[in-house]
Length: 437
Ligand SMILES: O=C(O)Cc1cc(O)ccc1O
Ligand SMILES: [Fe+2]
Image 1 (cartoon, rainbow, N blue to C red):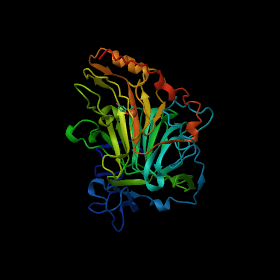
Image 2: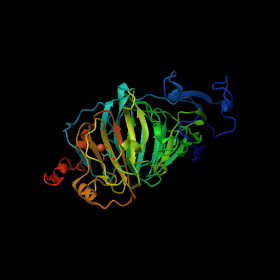
Image 3: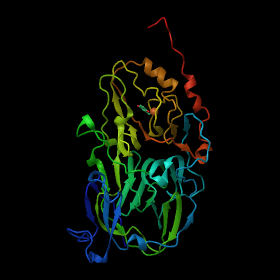
Image 4: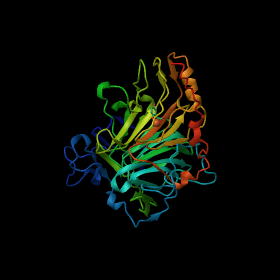
């Protein structure tokens, strides 16, 4: 029997509770002597037991079998193009890098997991710090295949085609313009409602993504907690061939388990997958002059132990009004101690109007490497009439991490790597006129 229909509860990191069968959740306790319906109780801990309240994450799952019974003889599986940090397989020159979109492979049927192509890695998965940035190219659904990632949580950023993520906690539908967050250790499979799907993933080895502080902005704007949607409980009661693949210690392992592990009939807690529509992000920015730091557009942040120094920030560049007076409005030229992986979901990014940064493409501006607007964007923005102007139909994003990002051999060898991008800065003309203040 399958009762897998989508439905959502609103809020970020709430203490949710949900049951697909009435009375499946124990009342007032977590671990009764016998659970209703003959279910097993299992705790999934996303933080150490003793983490402070604000960062303490765990859920209780009431399931047909505990995870230890969804087990088998694991053998190494082919990780294909999926890599984990540290991964120094390709030489990395001190240059800005940019790629055209990677097309879907012709003739190859790839599940979401098989279609994971790592572009960069940073930090060290074994020390629970750093990230990997992937592009997924998926062309077949997972029907009796399941997956969980023990190395990190996964932030999905669909760019083309929808994803239906059938998780232990319930079903998430995510389309381009939305994101989906699957915590470390949560089992799922993915269907492709449009037959194929392309997008980006931030695999976060560090502490979990959370909402950034708003400081003087106050209680509203940016990403509001009520717009995050967590699925209601939904389960598969299916015996039969089933392959569970686990990413653990930087490698993939698979076992035949003989039944669906998406067998959670009820759950409660604050450690659960969610989705968010990026169009709900309410941007706050300079309304008189100057260009603020891009941290104002942080949707989610995964902090490190050092205050203000994120393991990774997920930042977007959404539609918005540009109103600043006497201001060079696109991003300024800069060098950053953090590294910046960028992708484009749709439209044109205001720092790169000269072509070359196209939807589905991506770029890497590594730690302490200079970058900024291309020559077209500079000339246009420094001569534009500064009326209020709306940036419309655009959505770019950035995975910004404290660690340098290494490019994989796969990404370094892609024909989509733009040979001329490292020199884009040389097209910036000299304007210096000592006689003209
Ligand atoms: O490099 C980029 O395009 C991202 C970026 C945007 C911005 O508005 C300010 C700084 C920054 O790094
Ligand atoms: Fe930048």
